[in-house]
Image (cartoon, rainbow, N blue to C red; front, side, top):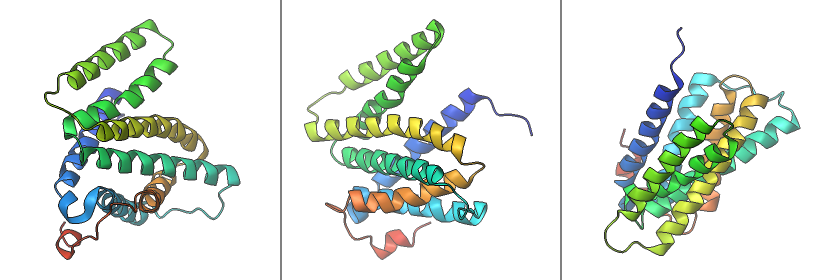
Length: 201
């Protein structure tokens, strides 16, 4: 099977994440931000359990620790960005959230060309952020920056987990762990899911 170019995978991942956030935003009235995050991650975990059939009985303590850290990073990232989107426009929230991976890219770059591209992306993020019209809730901005910090932590934790956990099992674990973490970190303000949402595809 031919390897897929990394830039294409990056664009596909960005599209998937942001499209999912836009869809989840439509259900905030029924389940709330953290409820939408939990449902999205639970469904992902169930699909991966069926597809991967993880074998975790022989994991070492180091592997468990890496998986737990990764799960918390994902739970924080998803919960905070959904809470931010509930207060400020989706475009502004995800623009601020992208500061996380951009900072990681700038910190880890070793070539001036890579740094230049990261700076260009950072400039685009700033232009999009300052181009917003009207007032923006400060709480939403703080939550979006918090999501950015968790995204940066996710990148670092994912790298560690990828080295320690072979195959797709690590993907399953982080998807399983983050819904439970999201439930614990976002009980305040979460609404009870309605039967119509739980039953929708």
